[in-house]
Amino acid sequence: MTLSRGDHFDTVVVGLGAMGSACLLQLARRGQRVLGLDRYDPPHSWGSSHGGTRLTRCAVGEGEAYVPLVTRSHEIWRELEAETGAELLTQCGMLIVDGASSAASYHGKGDFLGRTVAAAERFAIPHEVLDAAGVMRRFPQLRLCGDEVAYFEPGGGYIRPEACVEAQLSLARRHGAAVRTGTRVARIERDDGGVCVVTEDGDRFHAAEAVLAAGAWSAGFAGALAPHLSVTRQVFHWFEPQDPAAFAPDRFPPFIWVHGDGPEDNFYGFPILPGEEGMKVGTEQHLLTTPDPDQLRREIAASEAEALFRDHLQGRLPGLLPRALHSIACIYTNTPDGDFLITRAPENDRVLLVSACSGHGFKHSAGLGEAVAQLLTTSAAPSLTMFDAVRLDAAADALVPP
Ligand SMILES: Cc1cc2nc3c(=O)[nH]c(=O)nc-3n(C[C@H](O)[C@H](O)[C@H](O)COP(=O)(O)OP(=O)(O)OC[C@H]3O[C@@H](n4cnc5c(N)ncnc54)[C@H](O)[C@@H]3O)c2cc1C
Image 1 (cartoon, rainbow, N blue to C red):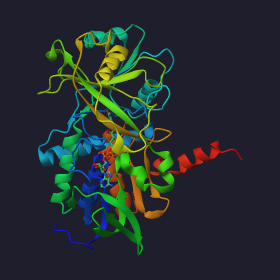
Image 2: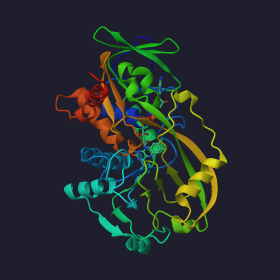
Image 3: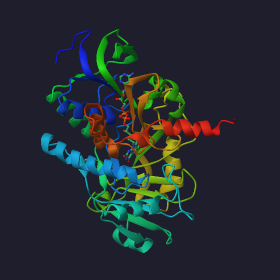
Image 4: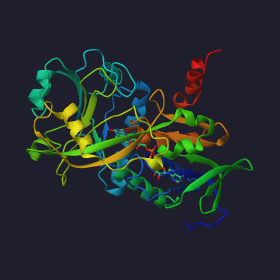
């Protein structure tokens, strides 16, 4: 589609990462005249959707309300694989190990393992609960203490984020969507019952609605909601294995391992993918926020990999050498309760803010894109009200002394 200044669309999608590309495709599939804009050229490494892999599982300890979203996302990725030939979802099984002394919290939710098992039982998701000996029999690459409990979901696995974004954008184009990359949106104005999306170059695109899926940059457009969003720098490292074959996807699962009661006493890892040399592992940090994502520190000090090895890997994955082959930085956009923020902008109800954030959004993104498209095009849309800002405003108000 050729773009002209002053073009009018049904919806303009700002930001074409995990969320924006999913929304754009699903809106285009429903016959909408849509435009997608991104300041970079997705998939890229400046936001939250890079690094080769993301964990997925259907029993979601972050909350049972997420289960239908991830289940639908798995179906959509299979459909996209059939349409594009791309490899998006690998269901090689996924493991969660809980070795905390009390029921540990992860992604802001207490008793994460218990909640995961409860979700699996409620939704009849095939799974096994294993003790430490059972885990080590199956996966001798892991060395547990003996008192851990683990959850294994055979249908869990990993997703390829860059390939998902690319597949969604190429199919959206096939369905008539206009896509303009290298285009930074400066602001979204009110415009005669709709919106006018204004770029930094001064182009103005008119639409009935806008979807704001700017990831870590969302706060700059979120007005009164901005204080609910904080950005944290996260890092992945690829560690050298002694025997790469022992960590291949058919012998070793993606995993989350919670080994203490503190919010950062956990790490996660992936099997070594074909063509890769190192095993990707990461942990989470919640203490240091970055007020401006453009100022996020991209360089990674050798001491960061050393600390990860010392605090998390040493003694637990004896087949890994203490040498990171390479490392990259990535960004979490966080809400205070760890849940997503999908809500009308307070200053302009024609703008839908869509942020699948707090470090667990990718696995839900395809299903969320479909739900957002249903919300904007039909009256029979699934409810996304659990992600509305009302809950955060109410929690913040409760903290203000009368
Ligand atoms: C280290 C790490 C590990 C993670 N692990 C998992 C996991 O295992 N499982 C899981 O489910 N999730 C995981 N997540 C979370 C998941 O990756 C994110 O929730 C998801 O990628 C967020 O997608 P997004 O579309 O909101 O942001 P992004 O993909 O970053 O997209 C935002 C887009 O907006 C564009 N943009 C910003 N400002 C503008 C502007 N002014 N004009 C135009 N375009 C703009 C950006 O260029 C970018 O392309 C992880 C995240 C990180 C960082």
